[in-house]
Length: 395
Image (cartoon, rainbow, N blue to C red; front, side):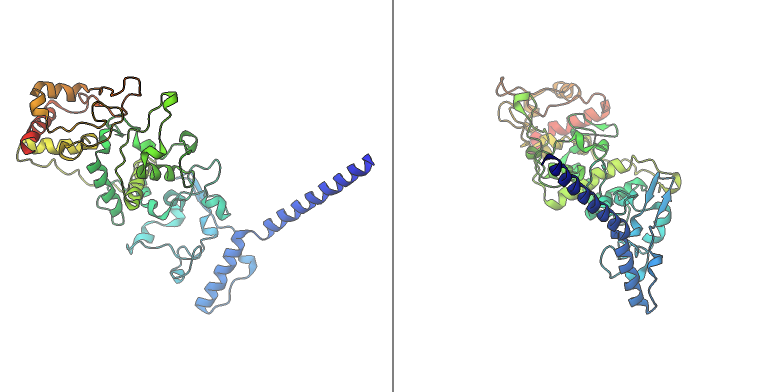
C-alpha cells in the first residue's frame, strides 16, 4: 500500500513536470512579442497594399547603447515607433508622437538614444509586464505619460525655454510660491529640514514606507501621494518618537501634484551623467533684476529662500506646526516690528530658533527655524530685515 502511494506521487509529479515543460516550450515558441510583430506586418500590408512579411521575419529588435550603459529592446513590440504610416494605430504599433515639435523625432534618434533614457522601464525585457513593471528588483518602471517630461533634464539644461516642457515651468513656479526650498535642499541650496530633492527619485523602494500608499508601490507614486496628502503618507509613529512629516498639506489638485512629481524627477534626471554630445547647454544666466528699494529686494529674497513655505504668503502665517505653542501653527511675521528690534530679528534669521512645545510631554514640533547665516550674505540679511519690518505697516 505504501509503495502504491509513492508510485502515484511519482506519477503526479512527473505529469506536473511534463506540463510545466510544455508551457515553457509554448511560451518560447509563441512569445508575446511575436504576436505584436505579426500584427504589425499584417497592418502594414493593409496600409501599403504590399504583401506582409513571412513569419521568418519575426525577430527581437535591439539597440546597444554603450555610451549610455543601456540595451533597449522596446522596439521589439513597438515596431511602428518611427514609421509615420502607423500614426493612427493603437499601442504598441503606433508611431512615437512628435509632441507638437516637428523636428522632435529627428533630434531624438532611437538608434542612438533608445527609449528607456526618457521613458524608464526595463530595456532588455521582451514581455510587456517585465518591460513596463513595476517588477521586483527593478527600481525604474515605465513612467506614466505625464511624468516623462521630467527626464528632459537628463540632457537639456535649460528647461525654462524648452518647447514641450511648459508643465515643468508651471510646477517650478508652484515650487517657488510654496517655498519648498525653505525646508528642502536642492544641490546645495535650501535647508535640511526636509530631504535633498535631487536624490529623491534615486531612492530604492526599500527606503520608503508604502504602508499608507494607495497606488502601486513605486517611487513615483509615493512622491505623488505625498504631495496630495503628506500627513496620510507619513503620519509618524509617536510611540517610537517619530513625528509626522513636517511638510504642510497644500491641498494641491491632482494636476498640480503630477506636475510637481515630474519636477522632482527632473531634479534627479539632471544629475544623470550622459556623454557631452547629448547635452543641450543652457544660455547665459539672466542678470539679477533691479529693485526699486531694499524692501522690494527683501520681498524677492523672502520668496527665493522659501520663507513663504512656513510663514505663508507675505508672512501672514497659517501653516500648521503640530504641538507648537500657542496655536499649533507657524506664527505670522506681521508683528515683528513691534516684537523685535532690528538686531534681534537679524539674529533670529541668522541663528535660527526652535519653537516652544505646547505640550512638554509630546513630540517636538516638526517645523523649526533653521540657521541661515551660512546661506545668505549680510547685504541680503539687511534687505530681508527691511522687508519684514515693513509688513506691520503694510498690514
